[in-house]
Image (tube, rainbow, N blue to C red):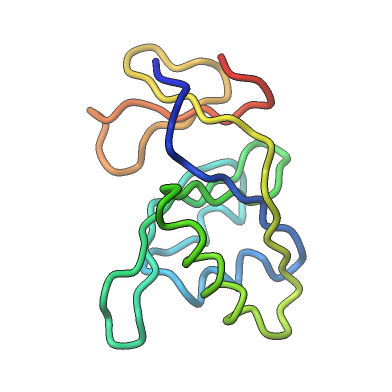
Length: 128
């Protein structure tokens, strides 16, 4: 397991949070409408050039989370804020911690959506 991760986690709230992201990223986020899950997606320029990739997460009964590499976070937040316009979506820092691991998943952990060999991701108020 690893706890120290150069990741930034944001919370997305508001009635338009999911539809706001759905219109901007490269992957289908609609599976997150029905319950917990994790989707790996990217943000591209209008010309299709890579800007950032990140995980969009919905925990049981929770808001959406964006889990992004710390070095991409500031520029991506700036771009998302520009695209937000009139959508009822707020992006705020999250106090959650990320723990990643291989092997048996703790209760509430989500499998890495990129490949089963990449293990699981667990978001919690305190590190495991």
